[in-house]
Image 1 (spheres, rainbow, N blue to C red):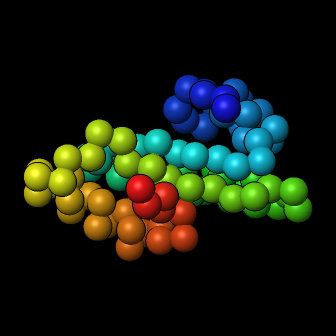
Image 2: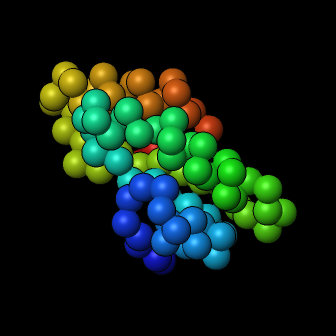
Length: 88
């Protein structure tokens, strides 16, 4: 397990090149949801071309199902990246 800084810097790219599986951890808020296209693009460009890469997943952290906005973010994420959403 390797944790890196967020963003498109060299450290995340190097970690992704060395990984078998990537897990993007997002908060259940609109700001985090807004980063999904950039995260997906980074994963596609860095990882998908590799034959040995197992895949990418996205996890919502600190999700409170009682909060309408967080439920909306979860629903939007599931629609935006259904193939990447880690359901727990």
